Image (cartoon, rainbow, N blue to C red; front, side, top):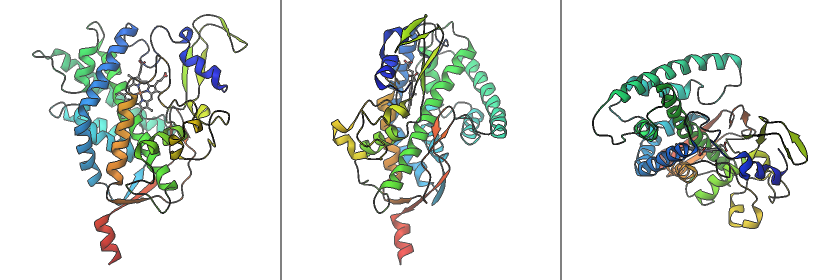
Length: 348
Ligand code: HEM
């Protein structure tokens, strides 16, 4: 849906936004159960932020000078968040599978048939192992204090949910962390490297917050969200039968010439000029918007800063049109990262 006002109406109007949100679908019985789970995972992420910072620093220290992106984005986020996703004493084989999944094409729908077939094999193993571990956790007795996001999901979930539903909820949350934060990181770095005058390093030519914000405007990873029409109705002068899905594209809304000044230009400094900005919805909008938007934004900023700290970053000229499937992710590119020490060695 291209008309900005109508699109915003789809995301905000109670007629399309009552009952349970499409993100969780029917995995939870009520909207209030969805809200509780969203709140609990947000709080768990917030509490983990200091550890995320430290672990990201460790993960970045192991980056080779030339790293393959965008997959290194989710890889780094997985390494930095691994103990939050699954506590260190829990199921090492599952943790290894989760890591393998990052590289096995499971996080986003692959554009080619053979890639999808390969990803399906990895996904099947992951689903089976996650389910087995959920069963094991549910049999545990003793004090109920969340040790990781799986415990958070289990504790927030009504007891009548099946093991399968719990496993699916956990995979949704896992994916939100690893995929969404990871690919948002990849976009921020790619765009910073392509647009920073004289090459990129920290301090960036822009405050990190503006860089990350503008990258998510220019290339929102979630490029489409949908709302179901609950009953036959007229909207925007068109009659829709019940069950129609109205799709709203954050990408199109972020590039609306009538609402943004120069939307085709990547310009982090626009965020210091509120009149240059229009409706911003990388995290969607309205009652079903992302439950962890602020903390997710801050995690991307943390990762961007740790990677740029004391290093010079560059990418060869690269295309910035996304690969679009169920998410909009950057095309493969190589990030060159040389630290100050390496620089001096190279220069002498
Ligand atoms: C940069 C990273 C992220 C992006 C771009 C993002 C984007 C989104 C979007 C667009 C939606 C709404 C979909 C719709 O309107 O139908 C959403 C929902 C949601 N996201 Fe995120 N997300 C991110 C990270 C996270 C993280 C890290 C978590 C928590 C682990 C999270 C948890 C949720 C939840 C729980 C919902 C459902 C909200 C509800 O239905 O009440 N997201 N996200």
